[in-house]
Length: 248
Image 1: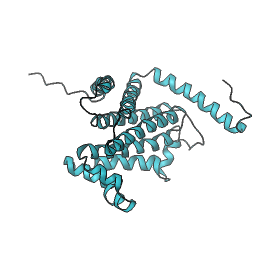
Image 2: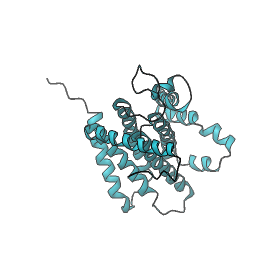
Image 3: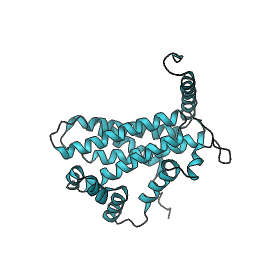
């Protein structure tokens, strides 16, 4: 379908057409890779869980906070995927950092729901003191007894590669490792695989955290929750298979 050149400037219309061509190339790459298809399947399942969760009718303001955060992950996954398939790998990764931060917050709230009203009612100064990204990560690490700083490493990786202008961020603007940075979108198999793989890992975490907030007896959510659980099992078995027992 040809873009209407009378609606937007011709250069922007040409850019959109190029993005659509790159989307076709991306779909061809994905069609040949079952691992990428599985990553997208868990993304869809997590987004569906978020969509069902926002339909739960409640007057509980704390529950509404969790619903809005779940909706935020839905929108972020959709936008990140749109950008990735259109060739904007760095911008797609930037949105995934938002997913990571939101998942951490959901994780904190699911472990201690008394924190939700503190966050909801806090002014900016109080919120940044207790609920800034670094404070949330530190609280989660302390709760779980983690000392490896893995959460901080993941956040910093997204920040350096996509969130902040620096020399490392230029890596995601290169179609090849040793090539020059390019302007505009491009499609390269390794870059697409890296983004979609991270998207799949984050989708597992997002679905798990949203799932923790469902009322146990709310039956409309059961099909989506079951579909997510089944997809998660398949995803884990493929990407994190259990070690085989040693033969005697």
